[in-house]
Image 1: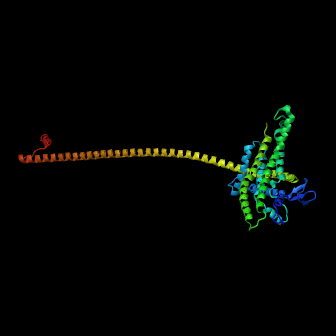
Image 2 (image 1 turned 30 degrees about the horizontal axis):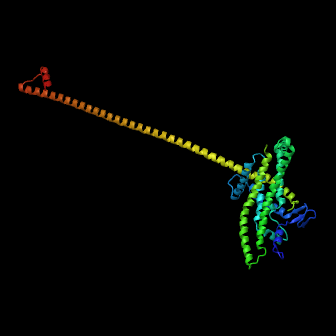
Image 3 (image 1 turned 90 degrees about the vertical axis):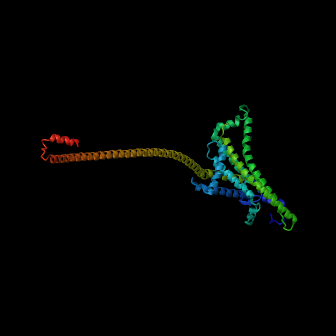
Length: 279
Length: 156
């Protein structure tokens, strides 16, 4: 960070990867805390902020929703809803009413969280620094807690829903008699457990990995101008390199953040469909 | 990267948001969209129906116009026929009247001629009697010579 006396790349990167944490046991703001009872305030804050954005976006239309001629904003929001709805209808053919709203929430909330990655890497942390906050990570989906929290919730809902859809017997049969028949029950059970556990882990880590990697690239590119000296040729070449590369990466990253949000949404729908499908 | 209580916080927030979206955000928007889709479908079918009705009405109108034209043509034909009839009748009436007038005039003329002839005959007979009596110097008795005089009269 530029305010430090002699910033070097290692410190800069580490600084950007440090959460603003609250130790729930002592109630103090801490740094690099270990243990479970620690809250990443920045992740939670931006996660809630973007949830509020989501609620505002769809709530503004939901409150005044009517079947008359829609305005531009209503039209746009309805287009988003229609898009999600068609995705859900493609993959999920059962009756549960929560799947489509859940997909809408995931698609847009995750997209908003991913979008934080496109903001200039130092912008919000600098503002935070001005307000007395030392560390600030602004991309909630690059926090494994957030990504895994969502994927675990999706998994738990899918698992619970599979009991509702298929009954205890159906789920039990799936665990015990597939894929090798009843004489290989232990193997079947083990395989099914691995298969089920792989779902939340892969779902969460895919999102986290992509966002974390994107963030790291931006931080690394920002190192080109870490000790910028306007009169130095090397510094200016670095500036040029950073502008070109960061622009390219941002453009590419637009694709990634949309794609990851879309994948998370579609996979959620697919898991719900799998939970409801009889074999 | 360390897993901590943020995970739980995120799960809670996510769960609440799913409930909220399901309860308050999705149904009104989705409902409005379905409602609009229904209205549009109704509008389209109504337009289709109206178009079919319009076509029907057009056909009916054309039919009516055709009928009216035929009727009008019929009426005109009838009128023509009647007019001709009237003219013909008037012509024959006029001819008959003319003939009648001519005949009565002829009869009048004939009568007058006959009368004049009678008168002339009488006068000629009288003159003849006068002349003859002057020639014979004596009175001729018209009664005695009536047969003779009558013969004379018819001969003139």
